[in-house]
Amino acid sequence: MRIKTKVFYGIFCALIMLSVSASYYRFMVLHDYIIQNEVDCDPTYESCFVWECDSDVEECTGNPDEDIWYYKIAYRNAKNIPACDAGEEACDQFTCPEGGEAECNEVLCTPATLEEHNIDQACTLPENFANELIIEESEENVMFDAEIPSEKTIIIEESTTDEIPADNQVNIEI
Image (cartoon, rainbow, N blue to C red):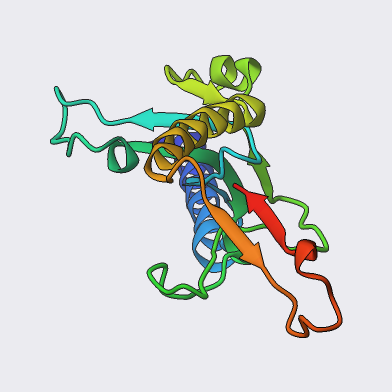
């Protein structure tokens, strides 16, 4: 082999080794990369993505409370995620701190984010979700009102009847 070819392969191998070493150091030692995760979202306060169970793909319970999940997308730098058991109540790995963190943000559902992330799901708006809750609660109240007797009379008497005339008794209709 020629000397030029040997020098070329030597420099080429050295550059590959340098690239692999730099990548290893950045990702495995410094943990300098962004993690995307889907976290719980409260549809009464935020515009959330809606995940519904697909019976063709997985087993669904038939209960809408268990088969529908409201979520938002969270991004956070791996070096800032606390090392704790995700099953613990106190461990909230993907909540951005109050003071702010440069590479930590949450993405709520909008038509633009659906298109940007290529998500084929629906969004909930807080005002629409609140209206659905009001309708459900009013239906429950109607059923509750039907159980209450239509008329009750409560007589309130004062304890010292000798000072207050008997005609001061009060009847309250409910």
